Image (tube, rainbow, N blue to C red; front, side, top):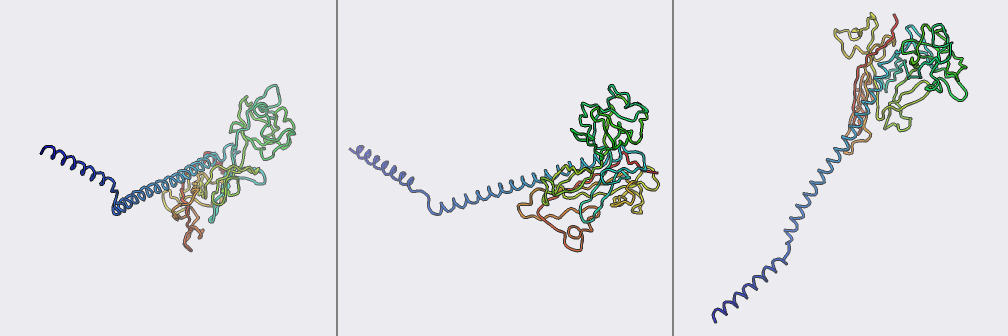
Length: 363
């Protein structure tokens, strides 16, 4: 009997324990617990947002900076290539070549500005126009003859005129054979169909030129900053390469400024940079002149290229413009007369020293 009563009591006790456990499970969170949980969740969420926002901002900054660094490198390489070849294929000095409406007496023409980008014009071999091929002709490509014959297949338009009716382009009258023999073509050309070109100066070839001899056209190329071409604007300036026929090519976007300084070999003309500009011994930056009086004395160029990012800083950062060479005279950006202009664009600058391979200096 006692055992039965104990069993009943145990069952009742177990039932009460189960009911208590069920009641505890149904009880839920208290208000304090809920508030604490919300605060913790908010802190974790805000920390995640800050990390994400910082990572996103850093990624965009690095993307913009990488782009402008690449643009500056491309611009510098293009400039260096043409400047290094200035004078290649030109006649011995003194010379005077008229291309378009301009006359050139030196491989480099300097346009210096202390308040804006500089401009440089380089005269030399522009591009390959074809090769010589005598074929069945007897009046060209050989010593004493007054004409050259081009390969009519690879030079269908001769690069010297337009088709279908042959109109001679006088801006392409200066050529070089193999980069060693300078020739001026006659302004009267009538044998386009046979790919023949008549010589003006010299009037006859000095040696026999074999088939395959490369024919180069001498051109004058101007590098400048342009904001009007397609894809360029005041906020996205471009480095443009322009020939005297008015053909513009955008080589690099986001290029805000180009500044040049020139190393000269003037007295004596011994193929070495003059070390007299600053009056001190040893070469220094001041030995390079911003505007040499005699461009034909230039044998080296210091090119400074400044690029700017495509976008402004999303966090409102302000950055000063780059001021190189004689841009210190520009008080709105570099001078001390008033505070330099700042904006939200990051900038990168690259300086390259370029030695002319064919300065073509006179005596």
